[in-house]
Image (cartoon, rainbow, N blue to C red; front, top):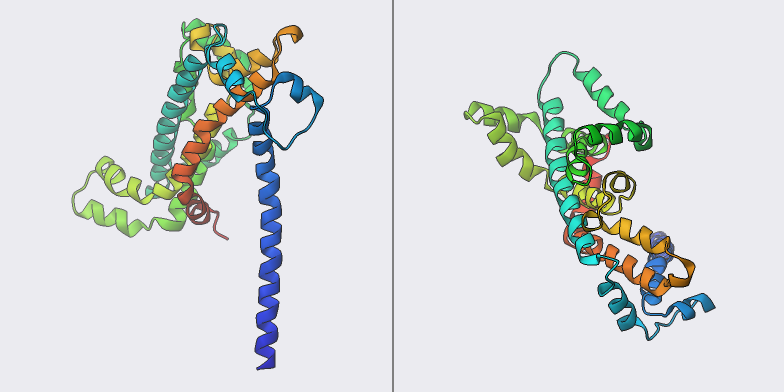
Length: 285
Protein backbone atom coordinates (compact mmCIF):
# COMPACT_ATOMS: atom_id res chain seq x y z
CA UNK A 1 0.00 0.00 0.00
CA UNK A 2 2.79 2.41 0.90
CA UNK A 3 4.58 1.57 -2.33
CA UNK A 4 1.48 2.40 -4.39
CA UNK A 5 1.08 5.74 -2.60
CA UNK A 6 4.74 6.53 -3.23
CA UNK A 7 4.46 5.67 -6.95
CA UNK A 8 1.27 7.73 -7.22
CA UNK A 9 3.00 10.70 -5.60
CA UNK A 10 5.94 10.33 -7.97
CA UNK A 11 3.60 10.31 -10.97
CA UNK A 12 1.82 13.46 -9.75
CA UNK A 13 5.17 15.17 -9.16
CA UNK A 14 6.41 14.37 -12.68
CA UNK A 15 3.10 15.52 -14.12
CA UNK A 16 3.38 18.76 -12.15
CA UNK A 17 6.86 19.48 -13.53
CA UNK A 18 5.66 18.63 -17.06
CA UNK A 19 2.87 21.17 -16.73
CA UNK A 20 5.30 23.79 -15.44
CA UNK A 21 7.64 23.24 -18.40
CA UNK A 22 4.77 23.32 -20.90
CA UNK A 23 3.36 26.51 -19.39
CA UNK A 24 6.82 28.10 -19.50
CA UNK A 25 7.31 27.34 -23.19
CA UNK A 26 3.73 28.39 -23.98
CA UNK A 27 4.35 31.76 -22.33
CA UNK A 28 7.60 32.22 -24.28
CA UNK A 29 5.86 31.31 -27.55
CA UNK A 30 2.88 33.63 -26.99
CA UNK A 31 4.82 36.53 -25.47
CA UNK A 32 5.99 37.84 -28.85
CA UNK A 33 2.38 37.82 -30.13
CA UNK A 34 1.29 39.70 -27.03
CA UNK A 35 3.96 42.36 -27.57
CA UNK A 36 2.91 42.65 -31.20
CA UNK A 37 -0.71 43.32 -30.23
CA UNK A 38 0.35 45.75 -27.50
CA UNK A 39 2.60 47.73 -29.85
CA UNK A 40 -0.18 47.83 -32.44
CA UNK A 41 -2.13 49.94 -29.94
CA UNK A 42 0.75 52.32 -29.16
CA UNK A 43 1.93 55.45 -30.97
CA UNK A 44 5.33 55.69 -32.64
CA UNK A 45 6.65 57.97 -29.90
CA UNK A 46 5.49 55.61 -27.14
CA UNK A 47 7.13 52.62 -28.81
CA UNK A 48 10.42 54.50 -29.05
CA UNK A 49 10.33 55.12 -25.30
CA UNK A 50 10.69 51.42 -24.62
CA UNK A 51 8.96 48.25 -23.50
CA UNK A 52 5.42 48.18 -22.09
CA UNK A 53 3.05 45.42 -20.99
CA UNK A 54 0.01 47.70 -21.08
CA UNK A 55 -1.85 48.62 -24.27
CA UNK A 56 -1.74 52.16 -25.60
CA UNK A 57 -4.45 54.50 -26.82
CA UNK A 58 -3.55 54.67 -30.50
CA UNK A 59 -5.22 51.53 -31.84
CA UNK A 60 -7.84 53.44 -33.85
CA UNK A 61 -5.23 55.89 -35.13
CA UNK A 62 -2.87 53.13 -36.24
CA UNK A 63 -5.76 51.23 -37.83
CA UNK A 64 -6.90 54.29 -39.78
CA UNK A 65 -3.34 55.09 -40.84
CA UNK A 66 -2.97 51.62 -42.33
CA UNK A 67 -6.46 51.25 -43.76
CA UNK A 68 -6.73 54.72 -45.29
CA UNK A 69 -3.14 55.08 -46.48
CA UNK A 70 -3.31 55.82 -50.20
CA UNK A 71 0.26 54.63 -50.81
CA UNK A 72 -0.28 51.27 -49.07
CA UNK A 73 -2.92 49.13 -50.74
CA UNK A 74 -3.56 46.87 -47.76
CA UNK A 75 -6.87 45.50 -49.07
CA UNK A 76 -5.27 44.57 -52.39
CA UNK A 77 -2.34 43.08 -50.52
CA UNK A 78 -4.53 40.89 -48.32
CA UNK A 79 -6.70 39.75 -51.24
CA UNK A 80 -3.63 38.96 -53.34
CA UNK A 81 -1.94 37.06 -50.51
CA UNK A 82 -5.15 35.14 -49.77
CA UNK A 83 -5.61 34.23 -53.44
CA UNK A 84 -2.03 33.06 -53.93
CA UNK A 85 -1.85 31.20 -50.61
CA UNK A 86 -5.18 29.43 -51.05
CA UNK A 87 -4.46 28.20 -54.57
CA UNK A 88 -0.92 27.23 -53.58
CA UNK A 89 -2.19 25.12 -50.68
CA UNK A 90 -4.94 23.43 -52.68
CA UNK A 91 -2.71 22.51 -55.62
CA UNK A 92 0.41 21.54 -53.65
CA UNK A 93 -1.48 19.37 -51.15
CA UNK A 94 -3.60 17.64 -53.80
CA UNK A 95 -0.79 16.84 -56.22
CA UNK A 96 1.64 15.94 -53.44
CA UNK A 97 -0.93 13.47 -52.11
CA UNK A 98 -1.45 12.10 -55.62
CA UNK A 99 2.30 11.68 -56.15
CA UNK A 100 2.68 9.99 -52.76
CA UNK A 101 -0.23 7.70 -53.63
CA UNK A 102 1.44 6.72 -56.90
CA UNK A 103 4.71 5.89 -55.11
CA UNK A 104 2.90 4.06 -52.30
CA UNK A 105 0.33 2.06 -54.28
CA UNK A 106 2.36 1.00 -57.33
CA UNK A 107 5.48 -1.06 -57.89
CA UNK A 108 7.41 0.04 -60.96
CA UNK A 109 10.94 0.33 -62.21
CA UNK A 110 13.10 3.11 -60.74
CA UNK A 111 10.54 3.70 -57.99
CA UNK A 112 13.23 4.15 -55.34
CA UNK A 113 15.30 6.37 -57.65
CA UNK A 114 12.33 8.67 -58.24
CA UNK A 115 11.59 8.81 -54.51
CA UNK A 116 15.21 9.68 -53.70
CA UNK A 117 15.29 12.30 -56.48
CA UNK A 118 12.20 14.04 -55.06
CA UNK A 119 13.81 14.10 -51.63
CA UNK A 120 17.03 15.44 -53.14
CA UNK A 121 15.12 18.49 -54.40
CA UNK A 122 14.42 19.38 -50.76
CA UNK A 123 18.12 20.09 -50.26
CA UNK A 124 18.29 22.72 -53.03
CA UNK A 125 17.77 26.27 -51.69
CA UNK A 126 15.28 28.46 -53.54
CA UNK A 127 17.88 31.21 -53.94
CA UNK A 128 20.08 28.96 -56.11
CA UNK A 129 17.54 28.92 -58.94
CA UNK A 130 16.37 32.53 -58.52
CA UNK A 131 18.27 33.96 -61.50
CA UNK A 132 17.10 31.26 -63.90
CA UNK A 133 13.57 31.58 -62.51
CA UNK A 134 13.47 35.32 -63.23
CA UNK A 135 14.87 34.86 -66.74
CA UNK A 136 12.31 32.13 -67.48
CA UNK A 137 9.25 34.07 -66.33
CA UNK A 138 10.51 37.18 -68.15
CA UNK A 139 10.91 35.15 -71.36
CA UNK A 140 7.40 33.72 -70.91
CA UNK A 141 5.95 37.20 -70.16
CA UNK A 142 4.70 36.09 -66.74
CA UNK A 143 6.09 38.94 -64.66
CA UNK A 144 3.49 40.81 -62.64
CA UNK A 145 1.22 37.77 -62.67
CA UNK A 146 0.46 35.23 -59.97
CA UNK A 147 1.20 32.22 -62.19
CA UNK A 148 4.91 31.94 -61.23
CA UNK A 149 3.92 32.01 -57.55
CA UNK A 150 1.25 29.31 -57.83
CA UNK A 151 2.22 26.75 -60.48
CA UNK A 152 5.80 26.01 -59.25
CA UNK A 153 4.42 25.51 -55.74
CA UNK A 154 2.71 22.33 -56.96
CA UNK A 155 6.10 20.63 -56.68
CA UNK A 156 6.34 20.45 -52.87
CA UNK A 157 8.85 17.72 -51.87
CA UNK A 158 8.36 18.24 -48.13
CA UNK A 159 4.59 17.89 -48.47
CA UNK A 160 5.05 14.79 -50.65
CA UNK A 161 7.37 13.18 -48.09
CA UNK A 162 4.93 13.83 -45.25
CA UNK A 163 2.05 12.34 -47.25
CA UNK A 164 4.12 9.32 -48.21
CA UNK A 165 5.08 8.56 -44.61
CA UNK A 166 1.49 9.08 -43.50
CA UNK A 167 0.26 6.58 -46.08
CA UNK A 168 2.81 4.00 -45.00
CA UNK A 169 1.63 4.25 -41.42
CA UNK A 170 -2.13 4.49 -41.89
CA UNK A 171 -3.16 3.42 -45.41
CA UNK A 172 -3.22 -0.39 -45.84
CA UNK A 173 -3.00 -1.71 -49.37
CA UNK A 174 -6.04 -3.92 -48.70
CA UNK A 175 -8.29 -0.86 -49.01
CA UNK A 176 -6.86 0.02 -52.42
CA UNK A 177 -7.02 -3.58 -53.64
CA UNK A 178 -10.64 -3.90 -52.48
CA UNK A 179 -11.56 -0.76 -54.44
CA UNK A 180 -9.88 -2.18 -57.55
CA UNK A 181 -11.77 -5.44 -57.21
CA UNK A 182 -15.03 -3.49 -57.00
CA UNK A 183 -14.17 -1.87 -60.32
CA UNK A 184 -13.28 1.60 -59.06
CA UNK A 185 -10.93 3.57 -61.29
CA UNK A 186 -7.68 4.88 -59.82
CA UNK A 187 -8.81 8.51 -59.98
CA UNK A 188 -12.15 7.64 -58.38
CA UNK A 189 -10.39 5.63 -55.67
CA UNK A 190 -8.00 8.46 -54.94
CA UNK A 191 -10.66 11.19 -54.81
CA UNK A 192 -13.38 9.34 -52.92
CA UNK A 193 -11.48 6.89 -50.69
CA UNK A 194 -7.88 8.02 -50.24
CA UNK A 195 -8.44 11.77 -49.83
CA UNK A 196 -10.94 11.35 -46.92
CA UNK A 197 -8.49 9.01 -45.18
CA UNK A 198 -5.76 11.66 -45.53
CA UNK A 199 -7.72 14.45 -43.82
CA UNK A 200 -5.36 14.76 -40.80
CA UNK A 201 -2.26 14.91 -43.02
CA UNK A 202 -3.96 17.31 -45.42
CA UNK A 203 -4.95 19.60 -42.54
CA UNK A 204 -1.39 19.68 -41.19
CA UNK A 205 0.15 20.42 -44.57
CA UNK A 206 -2.55 23.01 -45.31
CA UNK A 207 -1.52 24.92 -42.18
CA UNK A 208 2.19 24.70 -42.96
CA UNK A 209 1.69 25.47 -46.66
CA UNK A 210 -0.63 28.40 -46.09
CA UNK A 211 1.70 29.94 -43.50
CA UNK A 212 4.73 29.50 -45.75
CA UNK A 213 3.01 31.01 -48.79
CA UNK A 214 1.38 33.81 -46.80
CA UNK A 215 4.72 34.89 -45.30
CA UNK A 216 6.69 34.40 -48.51
CA UNK A 217 8.58 37.55 -49.43
CA UNK A 218 11.41 36.30 -51.65
CA UNK A 219 9.48 34.93 -54.65
CA UNK A 220 6.87 37.75 -54.86
CA UNK A 221 9.66 40.34 -54.68
CA UNK A 222 11.16 38.81 -57.84
CA UNK A 223 7.87 38.59 -59.72
CA UNK A 224 5.60 41.45 -58.66
CA UNK A 225 6.37 45.11 -59.31
CA UNK A 226 2.95 46.73 -59.78
CA UNK A 227 1.34 48.14 -56.63
CA UNK A 228 -2.03 46.50 -57.19
CA UNK A 229 -0.41 43.06 -57.53
CA UNK A 230 1.82 43.14 -54.46
CA UNK A 231 1.22 40.75 -51.58
CA UNK A 232 1.12 41.70 -47.90
CA UNK A 233 4.77 40.86 -47.07
CA UNK A 234 5.88 43.25 -49.81
CA UNK A 235 3.85 46.08 -48.28
CA UNK A 236 5.27 45.33 -44.83
CA UNK A 237 8.78 45.54 -46.29
CA UNK A 238 7.78 48.79 -48.00
CA UNK A 239 6.78 50.34 -44.66
CA UNK A 240 9.99 49.15 -43.00
CA UNK A 241 12.05 50.67 -45.79
CA UNK A 242 10.32 54.04 -45.65
CA UNK A 243 12.14 57.28 -45.01
CA UNK A 244 12.97 57.75 -41.32
CA UNK A 245 10.98 60.99 -41.13
CA UNK A 246 7.89 59.12 -42.40
CA UNK A 247 8.49 55.86 -40.56
CA UNK A 248 5.69 54.98 -38.13
CA UNK A 249 6.33 51.93 -35.92
CA UNK A 250 2.72 51.87 -34.72
CA UNK A 251 1.60 51.60 -38.31
CA UNK A 252 4.15 48.84 -38.93
CA UNK A 253 2.99 46.78 -35.96
CA UNK A 254 -0.63 47.21 -37.02
CA UNK A 255 0.28 46.00 -40.50
CA UNK A 256 1.99 42.92 -39.05
CA UNK A 257 -1.08 42.28 -36.89
CA UNK A 258 -3.17 42.36 -40.07
CA UNK A 259 -0.82 39.85 -41.67
CA UNK A 260 -0.98 37.24 -38.90
CA UNK A 261 -4.76 37.30 -38.47
CA UNK A 262 -5.60 34.95 -41.41
CA UNK A 263 -2.88 32.53 -40.31
CA UNK A 264 -4.38 32.36 -36.81
CA UNK A 265 -7.85 31.74 -38.28
CA UNK A 266 -6.56 28.88 -40.46
CA UNK A 267 -4.73 27.41 -37.48
CA UNK A 268 -7.81 27.55 -35.23
CA UNK A 269 -9.93 25.85 -37.90
CA UNK A 270 -7.47 23.01 -38.58
CA UNK A 271 -5.56 22.74 -35.29
CA UNK A 272 -7.50 19.70 -34.08
CA UNK A 273 -5.82 17.66 -36.82
CA UNK A 274 -2.23 18.70 -36.01
CA UNK A 275 -1.38 16.25 -33.24
CA UNK A 276 -3.18 13.36 -34.92
CA UNK A 277 -1.64 14.10 -38.31
CA UNK A 278 1.92 14.54 -37.05
CA UNK A 279 1.72 11.38 -34.95
CA UNK A 280 0.33 9.21 -37.74
CA UNK A 281 2.50 10.76 -40.42
CA UNK A 282 5.78 10.40 -38.55
CA UNK A 283 8.52 8.12 -39.80
CA UNK A 284 8.10 4.60 -38.52
CA UNK A 285 10.99 3.30 -36.48
